[in-house]
Image (tube, rainbow, N blue to C red):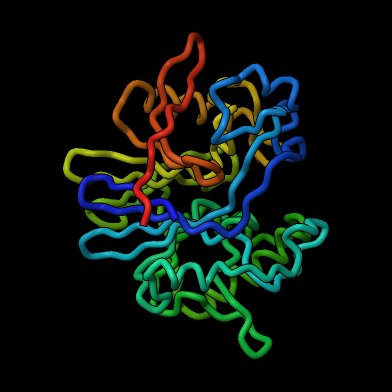
Length: 290
């Protein structure tokens, strides 16, 4: 288990899945031959062969007054073909969440950076054949532009399926708040618009005691994109806007104390962005371990 502190705020990483290799489906330029030249990716983000490491995890934010879950992974028992590695999962995520000292019933707020399959799965769980909220006392905050796009009936059938089992039940239960992409969640936590990957994509800014952190969401999938600014994702809905967002946020964070916590970064997962020639690199920060 990994923990980081930003002022009075604690962030804990709860892993659902980890993998190494097979990046071409999401980052087609990131083939091993090209990645091996980015030596600083080893060992946290890449193996010796140039295969990239990825993680699917939730991040739990503890402020003075709020318990917040950011992104809820893939989820168990869900129909996820053609993604066979995510189909009808049976992971220990919820048990691990509890073992980390968190009670699902005590969660005050769930933030989804966007509504893709690997960010909304544990919004709900299967109980007696029905999808019910996993965090029954939380408010689920979704950017309105994001919700409006994914509730459309003309989007891909797969995304409709994800919406129906992991998003719609939250709305139907009366637990969803549709907010702007710059919504202030509490004194320490604010949404930041980072659109392009999806229409209402947000990152999560954390500020406490003059310290600052940023949970990325999927405006960046892997630190290799800091070294290769033109490496976009096949899942970016608006490639040009996504490219603009990456360049802007990297530039804003570079050479600052901002702790950047990657939603899919494996290994150390968090670090500081520094300039590296015409691009950037991530200097990992050793987390606290529970």
